[in-house]
Length: 534
Image 1 (cartoon, rainbow, N blue to C red):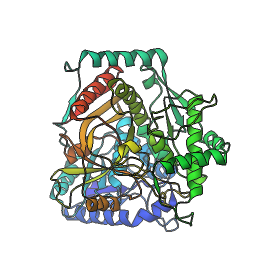
Image 2 (cartoon, one colour; image 1 turned 90 degrees about the vertical axis):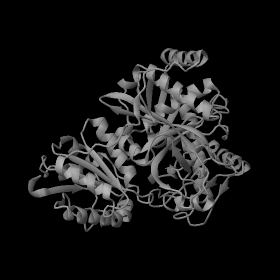
Image 3 (cartoon, one colour; image 1 turned 45 degrees about the horizontal axis):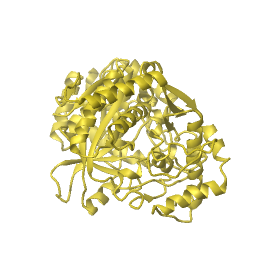
Image 4 (cartoon, rainbow, N blue to C red; image 1 turned 180 degrees about the vertical axis):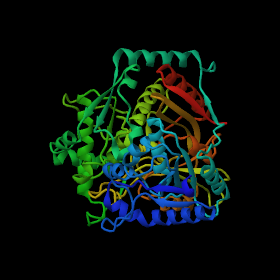
């Protein structure tokens, strides 16, 4: 290191309101990091200045990131420090070209999701073939292990974490003949009949890691239908008030709890929900016209400026018990089952959901699938369990079947105005106890790979659940998950995305069968599979 000096960059959001709201937390985290580094004999210098006019110090666009990196010594060690969500493509080009050691570094906080942003950047760097190391901590100044690892990076430019919980899947003789036959049938059907992944505009929020090159899908019989969000919005305008009202009344009839106010800028209103009902109908019909097996709506760029959020829509789509929508021929679309949706048009999650739904149908297991952010984790402050409990959280797209008391146990709150200026209802609920299979498809070495494991969703006391909601985003659906055979730091060291997919099984025994069957199915679809558990 030249003069023991390290550069620091901070990738931010595209939305000015988010960058301004989050800057104070980022600044405080950087101050702690600089203090710790100086005590170890190293100096950290920002590679870009605070913007007095914008009132934040984040890199807020791809062009700005390119301009900053054009002035950086490519051989110098660099830290990407994240206290909040970030758009990976703002800095990806510079990191791809960089020749010195790279460290991605995050806080450990539910409210300020730097760890989520870092995981997305890590997945993007992995896909791009860029070498990096990672670190995370909830207290930079007092975490002795964090300090020791940072010291190793300062000295050697690389950190190695424990990933002994990961093993490559080859084959398993425990699968029954009937399960083997089901897997054969799925592979044959996908090859013969092909599948369509409907994509309402790609590349949400800079998630380079969430787009799959088409050629990696062809061998398994999956093809993209590139749809337009403008077409979705146009279709919404064709939905009558009566049709939208019928969907709304159906939801009310199921016992859903809307929390309405009068100020549309800060509170949820019925008109926002009626627009979401229009989007739900429009998405169903467009997806049906194009023969889509699953659909993903980007939303964040474009639609957020003209209509309410898509999350209530996505949660309904992912539910089996959902309002019926008829297609142009008068037939109910995907009657009695999900029209699977992949949130934030994460195609890796979409592909995972498509094959999971087929497998679970064949095995007689639940069909409802959603992705969640790997948002945060903590021990139960009330002491009801000694296990480390993860917070899985997403902006509203969870199916009602995942929630305790389904529709009656679910709530509609206004989406936070900082991210969703036009509002819209969430589909909030607390996930029911049970056995789940979690998984993540990602891209590494120009190949599709999958990490898969098991977890138990548990109940926590109401006060502890509320604490966790208050520490994250209380309007969104939450899942209390205990990973089986994977520690917190092993999960962080290995995971290649901010998202992971979850699906319930009927019981623990069938969860194990589902995991092994899914691993085998993915393998036969030419996905390299890794089972994650000690």
